Length: 73
Image (cartoon, rainbow, N blue to C red; front, side, top):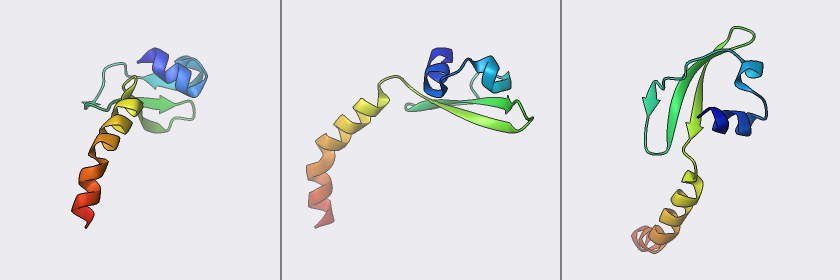
């Protein structure tokens, strides 16, 4: 999670957040959500996508495209 956040935002967690809860408050097949507080005190939720999920979702949608086209008719 830490590596994904830092890679995605381009900075260390400590440079972006005053607090960052490493225990997720929500979890799903696509992402996890963490509570955090920005340096200015604003409470935020940080959604971290699971590694490789974009490619998996794209493949699933490509596979289902003929079904969607049929149902649209």
